Amino acid sequence: MRRMHGIRNIVILTGAGISAESGLCTFRADDGLWEDHRVEDVASPAGFRRDPGLVQRFYDERRKNIMAAEPNAAHLALAKLDEAWDGELLIVTQNIDDLNERAGAKRVLHMHGEGLSAWCLACGARHPWTGTLLDGPPCPVCGEVALRPDIVWFGEMPYEMDRIFNAITRADLFVSIGTSGAVYPAAGFVQQAKSARARTLELNLERSQGSAWFDETRLGPASELVPEWVEEMLR
Ligand code: BJW
Image (cartoon, rainbow, N blue to C red; front, side):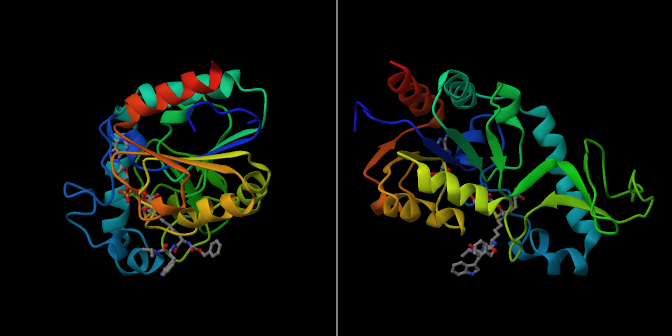
C-alpha cells in the first residue's frame, strides 16, 4: 500500500501510543499508568462510587500531566494532514489529552472523553477544567458539588458512536495509530472498516491484538511512522 491512490475519505483512530513520546504513559505497558491501581478502581463507575477521592486524585494528577506535555511529531503531522486534506477526515482519539488540538488539528473526536473537562452529575453540564476536583468545587452552572472527570469509564457508552460509525462507513482508508486493540468498541472499528471496503493500515510499535485485520502494518515509533505516512498522502 505504499502509494495510496483513489483515497478521499479518511478515518484515523489513535490510542495512547501516539502520545507516549510526549511523556504520557500508555495503559498496558510494564511501566503503565495502571501499575499502582486496579483498572476497575479508577476507570469504572463502581470504582468511583466506592472511593471518589481516589479517582479524583488520580485524574487530578493526569490533568497536570496532560497540561505539562507537548505535542510530538506525530500530532503535528496529523494536524498538517487535517489542514491540507480536502476530502473527509476524522481523527477519532481514545486519548483524553488535547495534544492533537494543541498541534492544530480541528477534525478531532474524543470518544473516551477529555481530561480537561468536568461533568456535573447533578445538572449534566460539561465544563472546560484545568484545576482540581478532589477539593469538591461547585458546578459553575447549578452550584452543586457533583463534578466528576468527563471520561468514559468501563461499562459506559463512548461519545458520538453514530458519527464515528457513519464516518467509517464512508471511509476509503482507515488508519490505526498506537492502540493495542484491547478495548471495545474501538477495537472493532477495523472490522467495520473492512466491511465498508476501506483499506486498512496499522502504525504501531508492536502489532495490536487485531493486527490480522489490517491490509498493512508498519512497525516503529509514531513520531517517525506518522510523519512518513502523512508525507506519502500529501505527495
Ligand atoms: C506505540 C508507542 C509509540 C507504545 N509509537 N505506538 C468482553 C469482550 C468485549 C468487550 C467487553 C468485554 N467485557 C467488557 C467489554 C466492554 C469494554 C471492554 O472493551 N473491555 C475490555 C477490557 C475487554 N468496553 C467498554 O466498557 C466501553 N464501553 C462500551 O463497550 O459500551 C457499550 C457499547 C456497546 C456497543 C457499542 C458501543 C458501546 C468503554 C471503554 C472505556 C475505556 N476507557 C479507558 C479509560 C478512560 C480514559 C483514560 O482514563 O485515559 O480508555 S481504558 C483505556 O484503554 C483508555 C484507552 O483509551 C483505552 C485503549 O487503550 P490504548 O490507547 O489502546 O492503550 P494501550 O496502552 O492498551 O496500548 C498502547 C499501544 O501503543 C500499544 O499497542 C503499543 O505498542 C503502542 N505504542 N509506544 C507507536 N512510541
